[in-house]
Structure formats: C-alpha cells, structure tokens
Length: 181
Image (cartoon, rainbow, N blue to C red; front, side):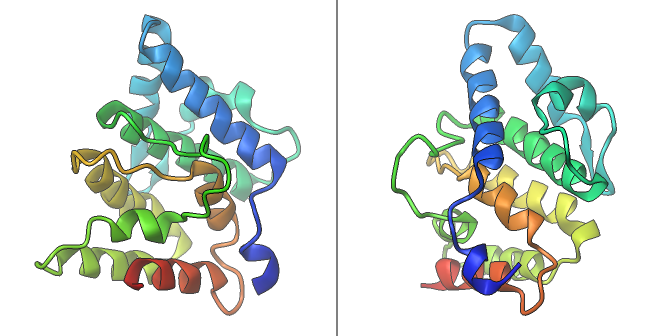
C-alpha cells in the first residue's frame, strides 16, 4: 500500500464491520445475549493474539474473501472494541461524519505530564505485528478507563492495522504526527 492510500478513508467493508460492532454494543444495553457476546469477545485477546474462539462471536460479520492475516486483524479489532465498549459510553465515533481523527489523536488526548503515555505510545509505534495485540490492548484499556469517553475510529484502526507492515511505515508516521501535534 502506498503512502497516499494509507491516509484515505477506510474501505466500505471495514466501515461496515465497525458499524456491526457498534450495533452489537448498542444492542448490549438492552439485550443480554449481545452483552454476553461482547464479554466473551473481550476474553479472546491475550498477549499472544486473539483466540480462535473469537470466530464464534463475530465470524458471521467477517467479509468472505479475507486472507488469514486479514482475518486475524479483523478479530483483533473486534476484541479491542469489546474491551472499549465495556468501559466507555463512547467507544466509537464513526457516526460523526467527516471526522478525520485517527488512533494517534485518540491516544494524544491521554497525554499528561508524567510521560508514561508517551513511552507506551512509542512502544506501540515500534511494535512488530505479533506484538500489536498486547500493545493495543494496553492503549485501548487506558482510553476506556480514562473516564473521558474518548472514542476511536475502529474502521480507521482496522484499515491502519491492515497496512501496519507497509514500507516506509506511513501508518506509524501518521499516528506519531497525530499524537504529538
């Protein structure tokens, strides 16, 4: 993927997946089975990745023609969303048309004087693909627990993670610029 395409809006299938996740969390407010689905989905993420049991929870939502790496990325984003939705009233701000905020902007809202978020975010930017579940779970947990209802564009996060290994690291460059400016 080129640098130019990495900053475009997420593809329709990524946006549709994020919308389905949002719909699941909206239903969870009234529907015990949706709430249970999110709880099980939260438990699928570990330091090593996402447990294949995540397919049970969101497999029907996945686009059909994904590579194994793409499926793993979709499942990771679903598990991260479930963590965020459990603790925040506003885990998703994709409904706000025109917002360009990416993950770096969301994390930047947590910056304080201690510098600990800067260190965590730097570690995230330097993370290899196999380390992303652990690093992203930390970041999402901090966003969710902040009490500030900081939302994340999960469609954009999904698009960014699908491009994580791109040459010249355009995703990491954009996240860094968004975080520190």
